[in-house]
Image (cartoon, rainbow, N blue to C red; front, side, top):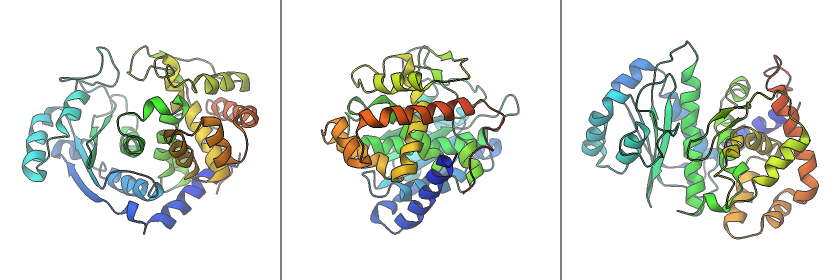
Amino acid sequence: NDIPAAAWTDAQATIARNRSLPGADKSFYSYISPGALKVDPLIGDAETLLKRDFSLFARFPSYPKVYFVALTTPEREETEKLLASTYNVTFINPSIDAMFGINSNSPAGSVFSAPQCNGNDSGRNIFNSTQAAVIVGVCPSLDGRDVHTQGVHSMAHEYIHMIQSAFAPGREYPLIPCWMIEGETEWGQSAVSDNFSDYLRVQHMHPYRLTQSGLNYEATSAREWTAAEVAQYLTDSLNVSSCSDTNQYAYSYSLGAATTEALVSIAGSESIFALHQRIVGKMPYEQAFKEVYGISWADALPLLSQVVAKKITLAWSPTALTYPTKP
């Protein structure tokens, strides 16, 4: 019960401690279209979360220049022209196009392309050697759900993917286990919340199945998870050559995030990227894990699996937002 509070508290302390580090000081540019502001007047909250991200992970590689762009589907062409005329940048355009299903490099049927507004905000990231951008396609809710909170936190999520890319440009995903790919970003997007209630509320702890390319979506109905099931997923996700090709890849958003949270509660917010950094530096996973966490992966796996199974099972409970100890 203490794990969420321990992880969130460490994140807040790390953000405060790192604010003056060079890595937290980026050239930051923001463009929010008139339509995006009309749909979500508070979409600019994403700027605050991004700057908290900059501090939280200031000790790790990233990009010195970052753009944040919010727009609606009808404003695509106008936004791309304005970015070119105002900021003299066009590298963002392919990602905007792909997000809206135009000239997309995503396979047909991928859930990551949204040619029409479907009641959920869409998020993308793109980068080159010196600069990066996160983009949100703002979309009105179709059923009264709160899309604002998820929309702004998704930008923090997308920025953390850019940290992953900066570690080893062009080859970051084949090197790290699948539980880390979305586990790092999902935990990080909740960790930059400025209050503990939001930290709990934006966590996605209901597992579903989806490949990394956005295909073969399948809702899961299991409300109770066993340690053995979690251990099997974490073991399978170590096979970096194939783990992203199965539709268990999306378990990273839930099981991976819960694993990340548990590890952060023990060794701090920066520990997960300390592990990441060692792996992309070609240190064997088991050696890297023991160096960062002081315990072998073989000994840690049963303990982590029990904790994660309980967290995922409790996520379906009416007490999901109340059982954790408050900071």
